[in-house]
Image (tube, rainbow, N blue to C red; front, top):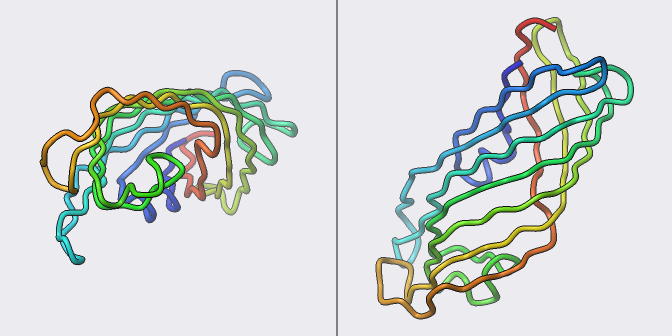
Length: 173
């Protein structure tokens, strides 16, 4: 099956795609990824950017049958990013919208979700996940390619690591 996370795409302006394959009667492997190469124009400083790519594999266990109903998952993630002009206090602190942050992150987490078949070819998926991420980044003055304020910052993050409302296209159930 192929799917796209509509919620993530709308909030992070990120085209994304996932493939999920069955492993057993109740288990699947989901591999999702996205890439946002957009530099956004607008606003007072005209320098907002949310450039990033992320890959997130997840092993899932379905309680009823694979691709149907409630599931729990264990996921990993890796991302590289260049983010400036956004207020992201959970990730970069209270003054994050005044700086640009460039680096990478990796982590693991647990998730819960529900897949709802709506037709022979389409399903909807709802999921949330939380876990741990280690972020390593440089912090730049301003939101453009300014001078480095702090170099090699390492931050340990515990909190939400995924959320989604996905549209699924079923190939061969």
